[in-house]
Length: 182
Image (cartoon, rainbow, N blue to C red; front, top):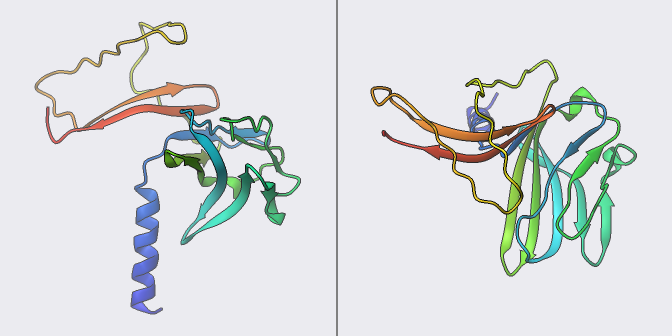
């Protein structure tokens, strides 16, 4: 194998593996990859792609004027349940193990520009890990402010703090903070 080509493949793989993931979803025959634009800009186009080792594979494109285009490989297996103004979530009705991987929802807007969400689909055997026992759940109403507290021992070295919303079939990263030291 050509060493240059091998190096490019390794760099591509390490780039994808080190990528920050916004949500993690367990593979199921029927699953939904949620992609809801959080602001009020005009959405011009939404593209869904899957990372396949060295390239991004097109899945579907939703355009404000031209409608929806789904690649042949995915026809009959995916649909857009509620393609409202902000909700561009991708639903699968016939998932297979080939659907495990990284997905990118890229939304082109005016005047805000491009917004992207990265979703990882994992095999069901890969359990969601809860690092701390939740003894004090927080309940709030939409629109209310909330303060999260993350206690730690000052003698410990903290490199990263992540706040996640853990559901039965999905983990959403709310906030990730990385520190050189605290």
